[in-house]
Image 1 (cartoon, chains in turn orange, cyan, red, blue):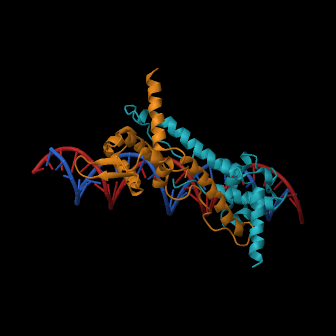
Image 2 (cartoon, chains in turn yellow, purple, cyan, orange):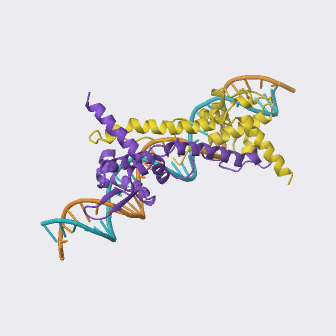
Image 3 (cartoon, protein in one colour):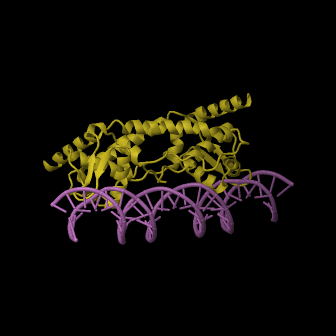
Length: 147
Length: 147
DNA sequence: AAAACTGCAACTACATTGGTTACAGTTAGG
DNA sequence: CCTAACTGTAACCAATGTAGTTGCAGTTTT
């Protein structure tokens, strides 16, 4: 458990690509190309984004994926929450001993602390939208080209 | 990678127990008892706390573990940083395609976002000390006893 | 009918974690 | 000086979750 999966990175990458396409759509193969990864992996992750109403998909020939909202209305936290499950911190694997003053009380208090730390992380993620990110990506690209 | 390990919870639990002992020491077996866990596991984690100068240990008969600082000078972030390694978010497993405008620029920008989110979490953890936590643990215990 | 898609189940390889056993080294006490 | 009670570590196991892949059924356009 050396941290969370790379699904957040993949999800945000895909959302940025879709935002770059404006209203247009992309296939899972096209997104997988940019990720140097696999279309099935992309569909798995985009499927979760669809469950969270961030994107929608159409089947069959000519099908693919599109944004379900404006890029400025999707935050990095939306992407994170859609693909990453549960809590960041793991709690005690066994309930601590009730015979110990610390053991029988620490559980709930630790929960409060961990939850507020996670909330701080989520709030920070919520401050950046896909539109913000795409703008910086394009600025970064122009910067690179001019050198 | 459904989050971090439970090492932070174990570390904080152990620090709270040591703080409760005031200047005294505890053996890894005593701490393991409260955790309903294993002395070796405890020594592994307390070893990291020692590397971070939060506790010290003495070997041999009558040995054990003690705090290396006052409880009010140890934050939950200190414990977290000592036992949890690396970053919370995983990055792209392969570097994205350089052929894609998004792919060749997103890496660094995502790093900035993820790092500032993690910093927010760490700052929140830094706001609570072991002394704070122990005080609440004891208050919680008295509360429970009075009913 | 064929081509180009999504959706999904199943499987592999791999890393990490929690847990355990075993044992060497250190120290205090009788 | 010998034994009991500790720490320190290495080695190993089972369980879990992830990334990656193959295969195939279903859907839609041409």
